[in-house]
Image 1 (cartoon, chains in turn cyan, blue):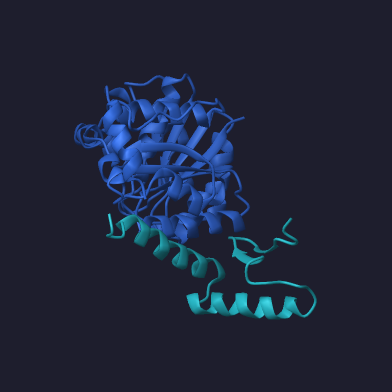
Image 2: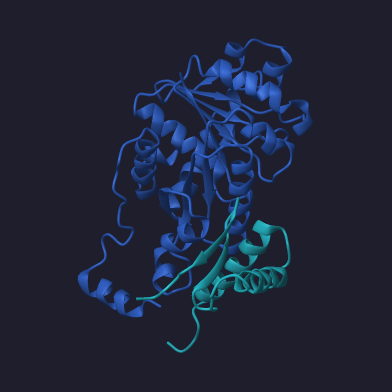
Length: 70
Length: 263
């Protein structure tokens, strides 16, 4: 039970691969893109790491802002 | 007016040809007029999987180059009503035909057939470009493995940028015993990553190997994969068919244990 299932490993490897394939850049570039988008947007909006998310799809980049939690 | 469907995967060996043969046979069983075209120039396989290799006279390149008439190259599968094969050329390569020629050929075939199924070669080079040129829809075949899913994702991106947006996913060779142990990705895991609609989840079935040995589509044999392929065909035709439980046949306690074992 304590051993990580091989599926969990496969899924995390795939997510990294697929994300970097989609933007045609290295996985570390993805992290940098997120960081820079965060810092640019934070100049104009109140965002935290929790309510801000960048998702790279095949044909577009999706930036999600969760807004005020009620 | 018929529909052109390309069956593609990116990675080789995931079951494109077997899927094409079975969907072709299934759609014809459902009373549609179907032609399956092997677009893998130089590596002809679809004829062998269908058991029609001894009947080849002319091939796809002969038709495109005008060496013969289309009707002369078509091989009718006698076991099925209205199922035809246009075989590939074994001695030519992918540069023998162009995407434009494929587009012209498929648009002619649309006049006569309900479904035109294109068995795409592996890879993303000209053979792939030829196969997708005239396609209205795409079926992406993958297996629950990292490399196959990664390639499928890339193929989906390429199809999108070629304006083919009607895509459906077939996950092939699922082994439920491994899924239960947490050693094989589930259907949900794969669809979540690829985010295109699922049209079939095919178990790893010995009958598929037996069928291929005999040159007989598994859809004609009494097998679980055959039944599932028939449902895939119904979904292609637009019917809403619920997905079969791949765990069917396991007892209540076995399923209860599975529920506790999930990660």
